[in-house]
Length: 120
Image (cartoon, rainbow, N blue to C red; front, side, top):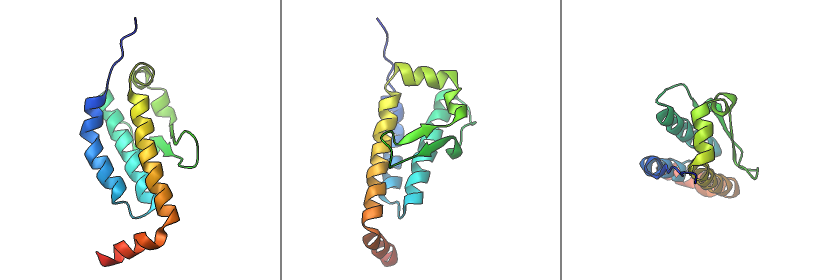
């Protein structure tokens, strides 16, 4: 029987800041940056390193799979193992869906977003 590892503690530690960054994003670039930065930070914590950066992951709201890991992440054995044997893939999928929803909202309602920016 295979043991399933859970990263729910990691998810819970990053979720409040991630949700805040996504909900206050004023444009699609801020959504992209919030997603990529959070994922890179999580992976750095998993591997106890600081080698991953925002540029090591891409966010694609228009695709079925809303993100793609860069070569350096794909080649990291610990990350591959975590993706295959834990709930890490689900966590990334959930985060990507949240970012995609905000991205879609910003694309559909740019006037509302700009009006909020002008008020602050």
